Image 1 (cartoon, one colour):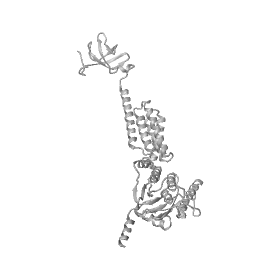
Image 2 (cartoon, helix red, strand yellow; image 1 turned 30 degrees about the horizontal axis):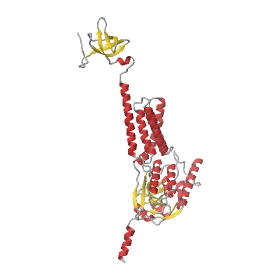
Image 3 (cartoon, helix red, strand yellow; image 1 turned 120 degrees about the vertical axis):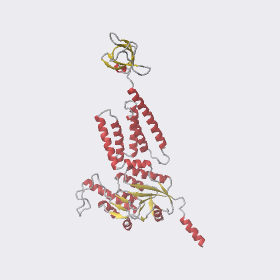
Image 4 (tube, one colour; image 1 turned 90 degrees about the horizontal axis):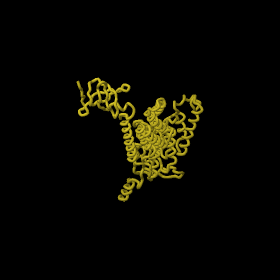
Length: 441
């Protein structure tokens, strides 16, 4: 009997056969890069047959459009999404509250909080309520519509998941917040867990609604596979940081203004065009794929222009930079079956850079080369003295020129042309063999 009991205990302690959970991490503001990272991770989990996705979240909030993209992905997912506000000290404020409410299982660690979900326009919300109304005292019609829309949205999520809808409305209208334990007591979350293993243990045997059908979670002991943001996600997150986006927008606008005010400057126009496209992506005015396509097109345009305009590499280098950034934005590095080799992108970009740097080098050499037409091509040329009495005449490139020299010369001396005064050459004596000066006296 003891042997049977021990075997049962051992089997229960073993990881669930074939159970794998993907853990995604959001640590910072919710933006287009965050939404792209989450949706790509969710798609990979579905393609690889993961049992669930755990979204470990710590966010102060973010953009409404990015938050709605994440919520839409959760609502239409074919795998359960468990959102865990962790570690201790983390929060799910503003947009994070909506994501938590949308999840199939909502969990928090001790020492975390959620709430303050009032939507905020640029410039902030107006004054507080006068006490008789749920709306701000000087709220405009558009602001009331925005708040009411957010209330209806979060209540629909609460009703879908069977969570506290009244508190959710309070979080939007009054910007209230809750601690983790209070959230559990008020039916805002289902699980209070300090780590992912404990979370999966408590989430097991819970029934969730998935694709309109009930499913019982069996996640105790499942293998946890971390899927942190890769370098591409980190790059996009850096670009979409509000401070960086603002700087990119200013650089883009002022670069184009300077280029229009000083046509032919090229560098301000190149930098401004690239910065403006990145800023439009960061502000979510352009989807990530459209921004990538725009940068690719701009890069090719700059590289073609390099062959036609003497920019000394400004257009070529700018085109290579835009082409590389566009390649990174346009193609997801981890899309199942559609992986783009970063080595290929790096190789094409490097080859393009070498080609156009070579073109720029040849252009600089051509610019510095002595002219072959007009009077200027004579400067630096060498000739031979023909006569010195009564006047100095020299033979240069098959022609006889009247010349002037401050040092005495003799017929047959070699001279170098230093300048020209009308049709009179100004020359100095040289020695072709030693580079020294030949003087007669």
